[in-house]
Amino acid sequence: MSPTPARLFALILLAPSELFGQGGAQQTLMPMAEVVRRAVDRDPGVRAREAERQAARSEIDRTRAERLPKLYLTTNAGAGQEPNDLADVLLTGLTPVAVTDPLTRSRLADLSASRPYVIPGARLENILFDGGRTGAAIRSARLAADKAAVDEGATRDAEAYAAASNFLNLAYDQAFGRYLEEYEGVAELTAAAVRDQAAAGRATDSEALAAEAKLQAAKTALEDNRDDLRVSSDLLRQQAGLLGETAFDTRPLESRLVTTQSPPSPLLNQEGGRPFSAEKNADLQIAGLDTRLQEEAVQTARGRRLPSVNLVGEYGFAFSNLLFTFRPGYNVGVQATFPLFTSHELEQGVKTELYRADAARLRQEKVAASLRQEDFKTSAQERKLARDSQAAQSQLTQAEENYRVARLKYDQGAGSASNLTEGAEQLLNSRRQYLDLARSSLLLHWTRLRMQGELLGELEGVPPK
Image (cartoon, rainbow, N blue to C red; front, side, top):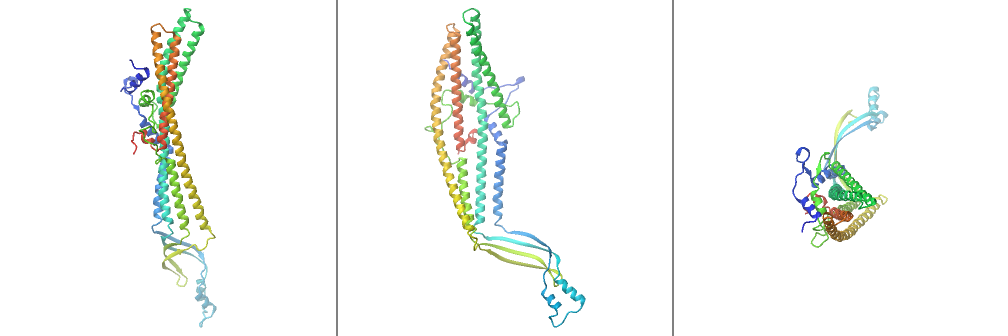
């Protein structure tokens, strides 16, 4: 038994072949994995998430530095008056010896006069205890960096899904275009035959016009398909940043779309397949990290109710009004601050953060419940697509057989052109139905992988861990 047209087409796609451009030069075809990688690497959204992740990593280093000593150079400049008690006593004559010399009295008065000043110095600070607030800030920075990494991975998966979907549409249009070309050939053959029959009086003019209308419809559908091919190719080139003459290797995807030997895509919920796992789901990971971040916010609010102890050291120069000179000085000590009474502000802050922590945990539970619901829906869709694909496979096999018989009868002169056209239309519709189901099944498979956080690795050929 000779192979059916669809199976023969699948074998041709799977066979090694070389495509040549103008002048006999070999043309390199871009595979889907490379297109996806290029699209992901150049996407502005992915690069923005990467920058945010780097900023979050830098924030970890900043929060760690809060525990280290800090040295500041200080300078006080201004103008003011500092009373000098000794000069005032001498000027008022309360001492046994009265100061009567005008020059001396003038200098004593200058000791308490207002004058500009500049006082340079240095200050050393170091946190000894702050109720765990710095530790909570460091842990929060680490969690924020993890969240930024998850956001980046989710954005990469989204861009990979968009690129792969466009690539799949291109493969779909390529496969369906070949079916349309075959159908156009049959429509042209039957239209010419009916025209000859009408000229010989064996067919009516209405039959000839109907055959011509089907031929024009076939030509229009083929042109629409070629336009779709151009649009899909341009979208992929723009998405991946490729040159205008770049061609794509859609043969592996086409073979998965047109083959009728097995279901068009692996269904993960079937017996023997990997079950759904939400451990790597971006939404669930982000919800969990938000919950942990809010728990750290609770610790920070509680830490504000505890005393803080800092080591403080100062060194500087002070102006001596008595000697008219700058004299060095320093002090080293421990500064303790205890929130004795804050009008319940700190207690209310703790209560607020506790409410927010409860809300974060509830949102995490909501995300987990939504994922379970999506898993149920996806599993039901997969089962439905599997059943529809089996039914479409049977219809396609029957349509192929009907067309083969109609073509054989027509070639032997025992069949009519209308029967051949009807068989070709039935075959085209069955092929389109099977292609639609195959594309939907593959997209659903990618959607499930995206929910599991494994889509990018699948598209790039990296086995899951």
